[in-house]
Image 1 (spheres, rainbow, N blue to C red):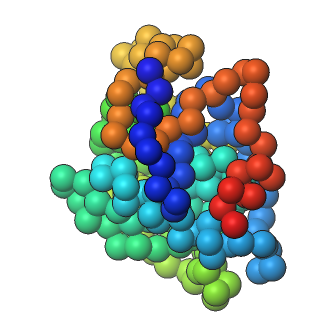
Image 2: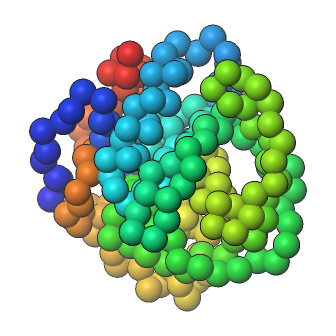
Image 3: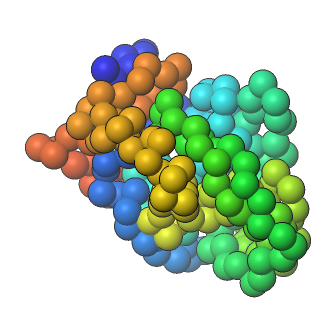
Length: 205
């Protein structure tokens, strides 16, 4: 069942697997994009409120723009806050390694995903200063996970066939609305009413 919480002003609901917005390739962000700083601020507030997430992409809050953030904390990690606007992978480096991942948009599922250990990426910060940085380890994994969201790709699509089979039934349950209980606000997909991007953006301003 969908978690019902009283919603503080700044906290947004997170879209759940099955919503078509999560399958869209995101559009580039321009410096004059209306309400951008407000969107990023509320994304950070929303991520912190989950108490388990360390990354969040714009499509996960219903806006298909090329943007994701790092931050938040869970029992194992404290992630430095960063904003990635119009990220572009320059190069993957190092070996590929399998490790466990989960996703706020796919609650209750954890699976072993193979990722590059290092990633060199170009991106812009909130003031549209360009950065080119090399990330490694856990940070590189989270960046690859969130970058995939901007391409319309979920982490379970990166699984091997054997790994996918292990979670297939759980995914099917989520897609038909049988969502595990979570301690953060969610927005499950209703075919009768899709919240449009303009409506979501209006809520953010």
